[in-house]
Each structure stands twice: as C-alpha cells, then as structure tokens.
Image (cartoon, rainbow, N blue to C red; front, side, top):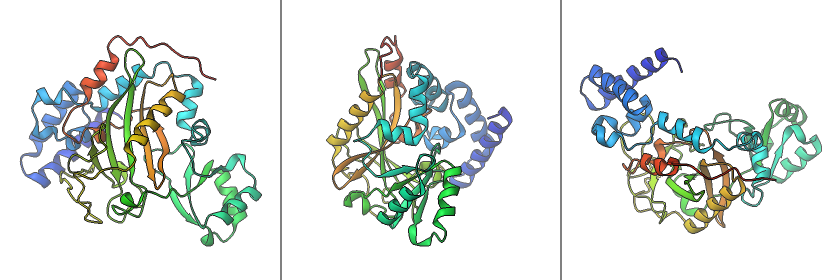
Length: 335
C-alpha cells in the first residue's frame, strides 16, 4: 500500500469514528497517524483494537500490523520453498495434513470429469474455492442440481484452479450461533527460542447476520477465547464499527461464557499441526468443530491476524517478543 493510500484509509476511518462516537475527525486522524509511526499500527488496528480509547503505554503491548509483519518474517525465516507452497496452496495443505483435514475434496486441475461427476453424485451441496484464495474471497456454496452443464462447469473450474470439497458439518452448539456458515476457531501459535510451541491467542469467528462466511473481513464477528479453557471471555467485534456484540446479531445467542466444545482436542490438534511443519514458526490456524471434534480448515503464516486474537483487550506483543528473543531453534529436516 502506498503512503497516499494509507493516508486516505486513515482519513476514512477517522470520519467513521466521528460519525459513530462523536469527537473531532482531524484529532482521530492525527492520533492514528501518530500510532502508525510509534506502534506500526494500521487504520484497522486503530479502529478494531480501540486505540482511540487507550494510552500509549497500553498501545505498545499490542501486536499491530507492522509488528506482526516483522514477527512473521523472523519466526518463519526457516521456511523452505516447499513449506511456503504447502501453506499457500490449499490442495497441498490438505495433502500435508491428511487426518487433520478429514473432508472429501477434489483439486480440479488434477481430477478428471468422471471423478467430478462421482463427487457431485455424493454431495448435493458442496464448497468451491480458489486454490490460493485468502480472506474468504471466492468461496462459494454450490448446489449440484443448479449446475445445468456439468462438463462446462468442471472445465471452467479446472481453468480457474479451484478445489471442490465436502461441506463441513459443525457441532450443534456452534450451529445454534449461526447456521449459515461454519463458525471457526482461530488459534495463533508460535515457537519460542527453544522451539517449543506456544499458543499466543484465540478467538471464535462467526458469520454475521445472514452471512455465509465467518471471515472477519467479510462481515464476520470475532469473539475472544481463553486459550486454556476454550471459553469466550467477552463481547465480539467486527472490523467496521465500534459496537460490541454480547449477543450474536443473527441468533441472539449470548456469547460471553460460551464454552467451545472439544477444546482439549482442538489444542492437541494445533500441536500436531505444528509438528508436521517444523520449520514454520508462527501460524494462525483455522479450525472447525464438528460433531466428532477437531477439523483443520487452513493455516495462515503471513500476517496471521493480530486484531482478532486481541479482542480480550490484552495485547499479545509481549508474548511474541518472548518468542523472538534470541531465536535459536534450528531448521529441522522435513521429508
């Protein structure tokens, strides 16, 4: 992003704050610019992390976009080209994490039409997504009955390098919150200076009212989660306004105090996932909770979402700094 684009985004954010809570637009703008220089904070950091409410001493404890970028670069410096491809391309990710990724899928460039037909016969509704998509972009729910020319549809998806995959059935407790999409758990995990895995922060990402995706940048709401207990500790937020959501806006389920099912299984699954990628030092893992437990969705190792793991009003930068200090864990051989 150019400096001019950053200035425009900051001004737009400041105007939004003025509209939502009063005050002076230019004052918000100047303070946000100052936060950009002092704390490497983006306009979204300033809004979502409520920097307009807290003092500089507290701001210094938050994992802002700039700090997250540097941490990512340092903690993931041992990643190989193969590691990077696995984390960036979903079909390679699914292969690497077989057993943790349990749903059926087809990578269309490597499948034939007969396989696609058999898949469609087994699944009345399925997900289609780009192999390299991010932030929920391009993810679509497809009804087999609505595809008029299956061959033409398949060939088009092949050109686009898409995956088609089985719908994840989520746990009934999470289904009650929002049944339009999978409400996923995000856990950021990092390796400390001895190579031990530490859980940095967590949240539950829920689709907003009527939403079909839970992504924070697509209208979703994130709720802070205690990494030890799996319990939601406070109200949720989205990335566009300053309102906090004690109740989910679609279902009216009260969220603070909600216990995420199978939490010990989820924690154990994260440690297993980190074991399979020993050269990766900092990842934001997305997990579905099914009726049977843990299902890995994806891993994000480039800027893995600092805002959504800090909605408990506790900055996570000190935890990352502890992992960064004197990093000595060595590259480990992978098959």
